[in-house]
Length: 293
Image 1: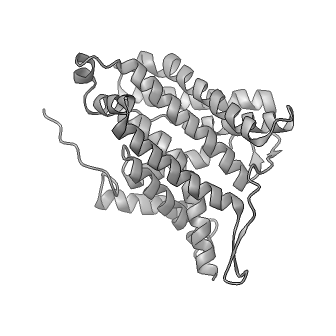
Image 2: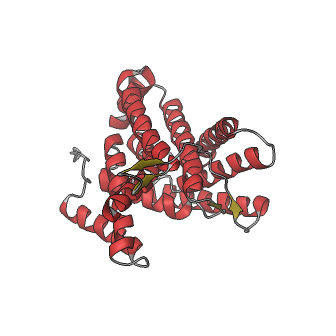
């Protein structure tokens, strides 16, 4: 029963990684850039929901909605101010800018809310699910997290394959120049991608703080890095790959803590990633891209 309990905990943690990784993989898939400030948008989402529910006295849904709106706007503003001017710049310049934006958001949060941890009240009131005569308990947060992950991934797959904006995203992902010649507004498409990714980051931040109720300016840093690892693990640019990579990474981390070492669990996660990249550099569900020279 302990193994099954650890498996459920791993799927729960992995689902949070998967939701964060979906934002990474969408931005990379369309804009071909790594937004390392994504983890700090998660932190902003957590703080927005915390302020709405604690200081303003709002309910859960208005608090989550405020977090999603603020993070969506933040994502678009960051893209317009920091990344759009570097659209044709070398990838190293974009990477350094992303790190700079990350530090800016962390230190801004530090000035506004201070370094003291905030206790985040869970937004989930769903009762625990008891199985096997009560020997196995699945918390409400776990249930909501896993269901949310499946719904979000399914919605994104349908969005990118069925809607006009989604098809425009796929076209920009394939070839920006050709997409622009076909009348697609590349800048608007990339902005929409950042908006969706940042909105997902807000949801992930609320779920993360509900599962691990401590909120700090650095809250999103390590989950953000691990979610990026999950995106690469599953095949960055692939929406199903982000979900598969996130869940597998969560399971590996929980089992590593339970059966090997709590202190070495992070090292185990990244070691598995290195092995996967050595065997299959495109990730589990990634597809190799042939470039004409």
